[in-house]
Image 1: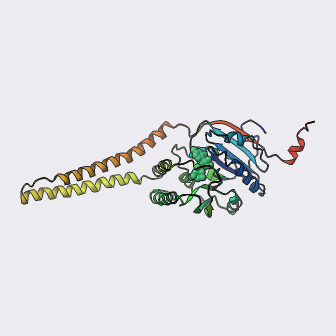
Image 2 (image 1 turned 180 degrees about the vertical axis):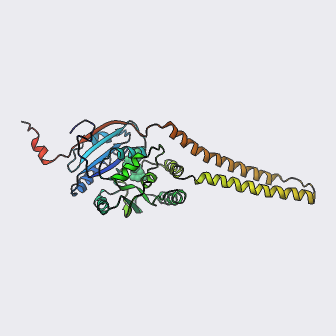
Image 3 (image 1 turned 135 degrees about the vertical axis):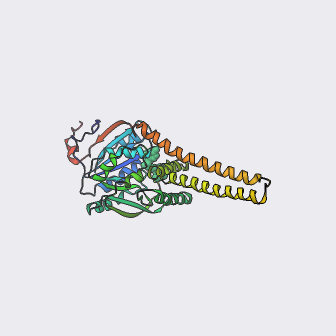
Amino acid sequence: MTAQPPTSSETPRAELAVVIPLHNESLVIDTLMRRLENVLQTLDTSSEVILVDDGSTDNSWLQITHYQPQAFRLQCFALSRNFGKEAALTAGLQQADANAVIILDADCQDPPELIPKMLEAWKKGADVVNMKRRVRLGETWFKRRTAGLFYRLIGYLSDIPIPRNVGDFRLLSRRVVEEINRLQERNRYMKGLLSWPGFHQITIEYDREPRTAGDSKWNYWQLFLLAISGITAFSNKPLRLASLLGLAIACSSLVYGLWVVIKTLVFGETVPGYPSLMVVMLFIGGIELITIGILGEYIGRIFTEVKARPNYIIRQAQQSAPQTVAQHQAEPQKT
Ligand code: UDP
Ligand code: MG
């Protein structure tokens, strides 16, 4: 085991890299590693696993750096704090130099046993293998429903096709990873960015398993913010909608104004209606606030982009080569 950050000159490029972001996943790491070993040892291609510890405060980093891989090379990166899954994934993709890269969740909700099937599709010429969730086991009715609604909404709003019910669990070919790594943006909605380069896509359906152990790292508020971030990163339609709404209200007020003038000329001055005045005022006030809010969402994102802070900082890196039989024999025997 070396404690040095890997350099490309020292290590030959692996055929397959599995990128896994993790945050406080000590309960699932043993299962994850066992399942990865079982799958990767059956492959006839060289493989590496890239684990990005996204500022865990539990034992995750110790566990992964002490792990002795058998069937793959292991690269562990620790971010300097919790930057969020999108940043951790960005870090992992930038470290992966393999010809095919698969993104997995640490909690085994994306079964590693599907890796050979994904590789098969890649060998047949696919650049992107999208893993579509047929069912989402272990998730509440409300989460499944809101996720379904969100995928429909972003599908309608987005300027590029973002496949429905496809998460980050995908295989990407080298050239797709390179294109994604070239994207400089700070607001990284990965499900959109992974789809953005296009290329030849294939979709495989699977049943998403429940979490092996531990709890989801996302609450509904964070999911709502992720949804807003996805929509603003991939669509200008909300801005257009705000303008159209403004135009529609302006036109209707003009018609209403004309009607008031005509009514006054024909029937004389009437007692002004306080309730209708209030309704119109509140309605227009509400629309104005919503519109300013939409503008604010985009301006806030422009602010983030302009500051151009890095998406993540790597605090530490460690690499472990697979423990082959030859290596065991080469080690000096203790007497
Ligand atoms: N994750 C991360 N950083 C975070 C939150 C989550 O790297 O700030 C990782 C987490 O460890 C897991 C993956 O992202 O490997 C998906 O998270 P989770 O299972 O909590 O999300 P869910 O499946 O509930 O959407
Ligand atoms: Mg999960």
